[in-house]
Length: 365
Image 1 (cartoon, rainbow, N blue to C red):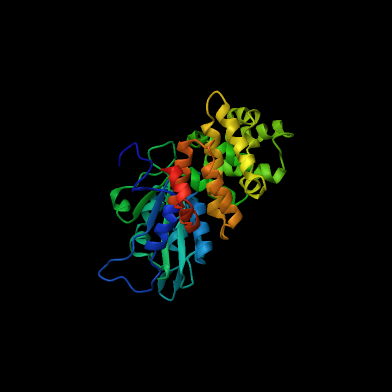
Image 2: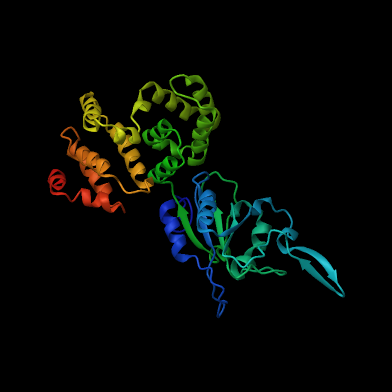
């Protein structure tokens, strides 16, 4: 493995990984022939990017059963093989209580697989290769998924040899900010927290500022009902406790710059004087000494996330406002083109049709 890579296998976003799971997971009960079976899938990636949560959410949405096993918590082989017992003149093993009993479909998740002791990892080799151990077999309607942290960073992990690596398929999950924004919008995290993430996406490379820790920070802010205008010091204190000094200082600057006053997408699209309000906003950003491309990025990322999570079709009024946005003279050409490109690549047929309208197409081209 190249020492610069964070894991094994091709890099993939969370969104693409979900699509991949849909296409490759096979829960059929047809027995393997000639020693061939579907390989377990190992998802590599940095801590805190949502590997485990993705599998839990995927299983829940699909209605699959899920058994979550953390091999790092296992100290004795008996927890894998089962405990010995005597039946007549023979010694047998009673399978562990965590072993699935149903026919599935189900997922056995071996979480943080390479944080386990080397002896335990070696003990799982038969399970990975044959979906069984000495005393028990995984039901045929079950698949094995694993998560693992990179061997190249400062993680306390056990290096895997080729005998183990060749028993699995490998993908390296990478963080995608837009995917996170879509998730945050869906879970109704505070808008200004999402804006901060969009303005300082480089912080997600920090050790303590991971997608998981920042999501926890945003959750705590919502739980405690903290407001930037009145609870400034409390927000910074919690940020320092969860996210560290560097992120706290960035947040302090952010809260003092007025970023969190960017209107919510829902409010913008719901206002009667949309054209005047958005026009005034863009005029303000364009007149500053340096054109506020950062604010454009925040607003339009939020807009795209809103459009993605919206389940019902766009109303005629909403489509009309989006068209007015694209036709605004104050909208910089590069921003207009980027929006058009995003909507062209969207799965939303209404947005695709919107950018094909002659009046809009002329402005883009």
